[in-house]
Length: 256
Ligand SMILES: Nc1ncnc2c1ncn2[C@@H]1O[C@H](COP(=O)(O)OP(=O)(O)OP(=O)(O)O)[C@@H](O)[C@H]1O
Image (cartoon, rainbow, N blue to C red):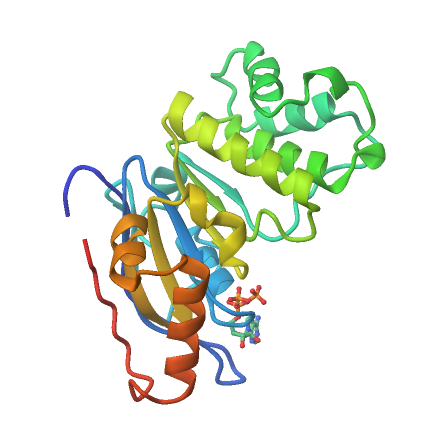
């Protein structure tokens, strides 16, 4: 594993009691990547992300964050990781600022100015005294990201960050991710079931279907190799797997 590998997932398998889950998932994310994890509903994106964030235990396989195994030393592995899985949770009757103060309690060594910094980064400074209950969904998502940013993470894991957002809020969120990647040098592992919403900001892409990674590569190489938009490429891959043209076998090809 190179020094630059921020997240290293190897051979993850998780079977829920109902027999669903993920099988033999491996992927690596390098410092500076905006890694887009795409797949249909129920493909296994959240399961992989929850295991990566130490929230669900895998049956087999290994996750290393910044070189530390999550199962062996959770606190160390997660020290530089911010997580937003599913919907951003916040106390609705409190202001954005108060919510972030609570998040900041986990990091007593951080200066109080960090709260204003993350409010500024996420474009919420003007609303910081407003109750979160009055926020739009897009603002709540941005507050969730602000909360994940408090501890100055090197990696942000965002599961379906655009879920339920309208176009304007989706565009704002994309702009925010690009800005954070550039200005704060944050690496991203983000998922979506709508490739068109995120493909333009991703440097690497993994496609998961029925619990297995079926394609992986850099945005450029996948786009060039396919000679079509990534959305069309994605659809053709998903359909060909469904049609059994590849016998449903895991075919993680790295085109880089
Ligand atoms: N706690 C659970 N118990 C049983 N089955 C589960 C559980 N969580 C997920 N599953 C099943 O595992 C499979 C993968 O689910 P997962 O939520 O990881 O997919 P996903 O790609 O994130 O889907 P979506 O885009 O709909 O969020 C699905 O078939 C789902 O029904």
